[in-house]
Length: 113
Image 1 (spheres, one colour):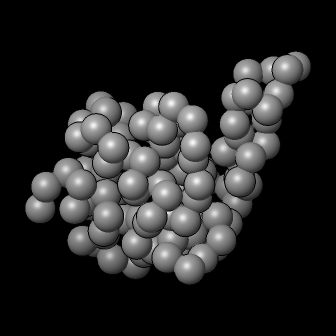
Image 2 (image 1 turned 90 degrees about the vertical axis):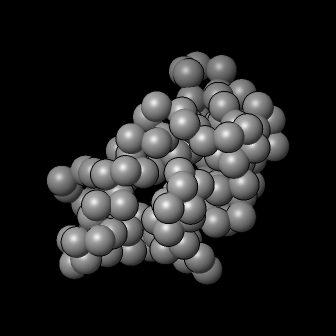
C-alpha cells in the first residue's frame, strides 16, 4: 500500500460524517482494529514527514474528509491533517477545531470547519 492509499484508508472514515463524528469514527477504528491502528501509525508518519505527492493532501481533505480548502491548498491541507491527528490522539473527548489563518487578525488561527 502506498502513502496515498494508506491515507485514504484512514480518511474514508470521514465519508458522509461531520468533523466530530469523523474523529470519533477514527478513534473507534484504531481502538477496535489492529490493522487500522497500524495504518494510523503509518498515516501519522506520512503526514508529519510531508510524504504525499503534490495535490494529494488537498485531495484527501477535500474529497475524503469532505472539507473545502481554497488557498495554499497543500500547505493548508497539511495544517488540517495535523490538527485532525492531534484531535484523534487526544486522551480526553475534547476537540481543537481546524482554523483558517486569514480569518483571524488577533491570533495565528481562527475557528474554521
